[in-house]
Every structure is written in structure tokens, then in C-alpha cells.
Image (cartoon, rainbow, N blue to C red; front, top):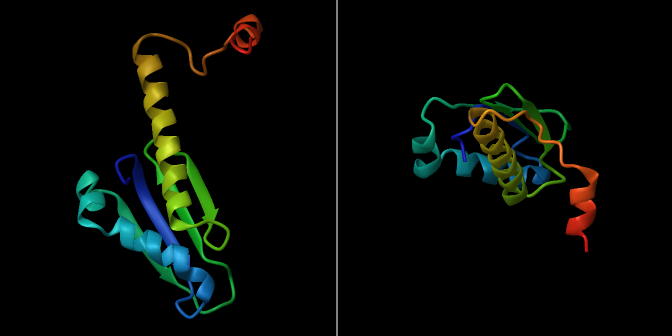
Length: 116
């Protein structure tokens, strides 16, 4: 999961019941398997004392940043979004290495033909 990330920042108030998914995601980030996938990924924890909602901010290896609301998303959904973005990055890399432009433009006729 951390393979395509350079930094993970998790902010939460430990006494806030809404922090459950952020804490679960932190545990996933600290697992042996996740850490071994990218030991250089920086995992930063900020414990808050205010009423701000828990947040998970990630920075991908391509520089893209995404901030996710820890109250609205379960830890598995956060993980899924990271993996989806990582898959998109892998696809982009594959196309660029093959000499194709990115993003790939699909002609409208092909899209309509695939709906039939």
C-alpha cells in the first residue's frame, strides 16, 4: 500500500469517536508488510486537541496529494482509493514507456461501439 507513497499524514483527536478509521488506517500503515513495501515512506501522526475531523493526507511518488476525510471514509475505502491511484500511475507509466501520449484519447466511435 505504501509502495507508491512518499508521505502519509494522519491527523486525529484520540478522544474523538470519529477517529476510528484514521486509527485503523494508521495501524495498516505501520504493519510489517506495508512498511516493507516502502521503508522510505514517511508516516507522520498529528494528535489534535480540537474538534476538527480526522484527516488522512497522502503524497504519491508523482507529487500528487490527496486529503481524505477520516469521518466519511472507512479505513478500507481510504486504502482502496490509494491502490486505485497507484494502479492509474502504473498504467500511465506503462503507456509513457511504450511511447504513447497520456492521457489516452479514445475516439467516440470506439466508446459507442463498445456499448452495443
